[in-house]
Length: 628
Image (tube, rainbow, N blue to C red):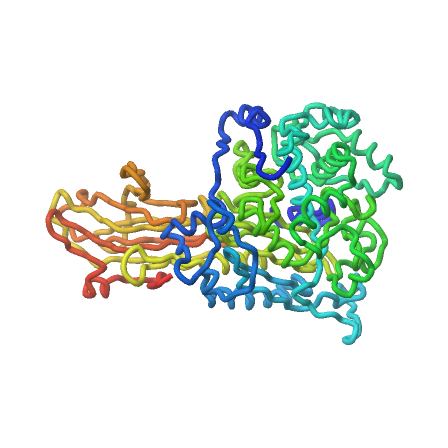
């Protein structure tokens, strides 16, 4: 297995048609019924349309060009290098992104997470960061007795470069998925059809009811991985697949499995009469000009390819020595390097082109590989029955464990076991590519996704949030395992119509992190203050949303909300109010902002943060005034 929630079944890693033709709803109807009506196939704003219209996300304007919007080809950018400002990003968080990534070149904690990496971040049509760090080739072997890497002589080590090519591992699944969605769009593949209707032998082992959608969303019931490479012939490998018995009833559970995408490969090859590597070239990489993306790179590429593992028993399923220029995954290797779940090699810039294509709604320059309706399916959650395992067709959605603060219900991406990751956020029109060789020299040297999370947090922070009013707003910060408080001075309330008003912006890891409004009459015993929020929008004023527990958590759309809280229960007292922002030790969202704080006591205003004297009386622990 090549995903990052597990490693080849051996090493566990922390969890976890023609252009513009569109997709007929009749090909999707079964999917809506299967999900109990929970799936709403509504258009998802792509290419930064949300960011441009949304003042809360600091959408770039003026000189800052996001290339946003889907209304005309003129607003669907191709990539060019540019400054952070041109991308509508903040420079300092991007600088910190690089520093954070470089920290994992050292022991973290016992060994380097990777020997090197290539980092690429951008917004709209601008690549604002493209930075190689560390080594593409450092070790010639791994010494298991001393748990050390045996280094090549210095003159044979190879530094990372911007165009270094990586074994993408499970990011390959995205290419297979895109090829499948193309066939759905063209009417040759039905999303709700059974796999056995295309591959009759697949029905063995009780798999006759597994559908194409279940392969794409990892709800087929397949085990995560089986050692297909142990069978020397292709026929033997296929027989293992045909005989495989599902571990759970199809559609009843989410279980990430390489076998899903291998099965999808077989369907595609059956339908098209072309092998997967030819499909990839003819349908995706050639039209998009992704000339450094392919299966089985030629020997001439080897000096520009990042090495992977010293593959030997028992940690590897095969005795191969240093794997360099060939696919790392054993099953993909057994399939001759071409497999639906692994085997694609690529570089950061090519992946950025793919990211830009999808954020553009399926088009890049003059080439369209998918319709806008098809791209919507990549960003639509088909796994509403399995909260926490949100999944579009092929793409994972809303996964803080590697997307960090870039995670939103619309954020899509994937990881690869070799140390690779790709994250796209249509909400802010941003994209992040982190390509590392983290199994070099051995897979056991790393665990978790700390560098991915750290870099994603920095890119999320680089997207400015403009204050609701004035030049600054109070910002909670984005620290994990922390509590930050923002406290108003004691206020005497005498009216039955006392209330708090403010502007509020929040995005936290759902349920784990939260923002709380609390009150105290003595400064020690703090009680929750119920409040309502209303999200502004065009047309009529939206109905206020109640928060009876006095708290918010999760996704709020990354826009400013108007908050009101009834303070009449504290009539006749001297009251203190505070915001408390609390995070756990794992992941964080983009944080919280508070602006335009005002307390009214009937007809008089007793506190207004826009008055300098009142603003100076706010007590902040962990919160800071921020222009962005």
